[in-house]
Length: 479
Image 1 (cartoon, helix red, strand yellow):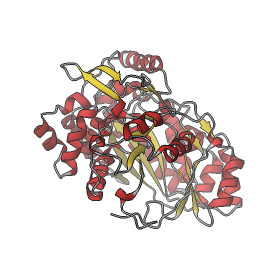
Image 2: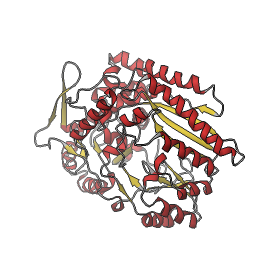
Image 3: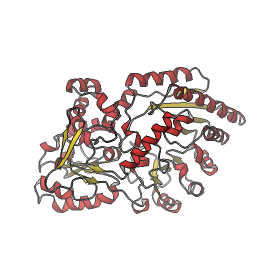
């Protein structure tokens, strides 16, 4: 395995950095290191090997499942700390023993060095104690940018082999002010922050060339200057795409711009079918909002609409599952009626994904349903909707969602599981071989006062807020 830019093998570098956005990519990290000839465990590497660091959303939320593999993690927004970290590394590399170098690097805010901490467990498997080595800070504080304009994020390298090979991506907002109780972005990236429309336009003008522009944010339609930005991009003859929008904040300018950009499908995320369930998750949209959005999308001449739901949400009932079916048919009827006025036959596609509890969210404490039960619920929705005209169901993998939950709530004891899976074993096969109880990680409810595996890390959101929001959701479910 070589670097495309230099022709050097990976083990010839002094520093290797990984950005990991999805927990299920942990298995690929192991495969990459094995192919490179670099020892997998940090404790087995010495000064002759590269220093391995990692960042990205997955490790920001919970780095513990891969803590044995990396020398350090950069937690939070990487832009403020990368330069300080790299400058210190370049200054000291080769002048200090590896362990001492890591101690110095750990002084950078947001840098977590797992080898400087020991974790002890209760007999039931829960965390008993988090023990820093002498002279090491007791906990690691994540580093979050207060202003997005200080370090704007956009595409620096565009590869023809990448997923977005023909698109220039620019992050117009980070976090989300809506605070849905399952959403990691809303809680972990507080406070919600944006670039101004003028700043986005300037970045696009200087860097995008003739490429289509991808506007990145948790809820692009909530962006306060979305109309101004859409008009400006259209004036520049730039086609654009959005990562997501909300049914209750869809503007005419955004719809018009997306239509001009050639969009044939737009996604609405009701998340839940019933108003009861949307209130429990704090979604903040009504059925009227959803139906109005579908009607306006069709009226704008966009041929297809996609509905995104989460199934197995905390406190979900059978009636909530049936409500997914009912709402989908209502959207289909409204969408078709509006499409027919333009003499077009629109269609509705449905994506149903299992709920996965994420760190530092109110619903982290609620375990996901069993794999069997989730499959039953998905099958119930699928069997009903597949009989309906102009509705299609996308395939989903419940197994992948369970794996994601195991890693999202996991600890350092999962390192051997990841290694076995990288060698070709399934999740269940690896767990059986190691005598690991997967339900302990994915399916159990976690007491509100239990220390999580990532308890060494001080998040940017107070636990009191998470507990308060969880209790609010529980009260709504009992009403």
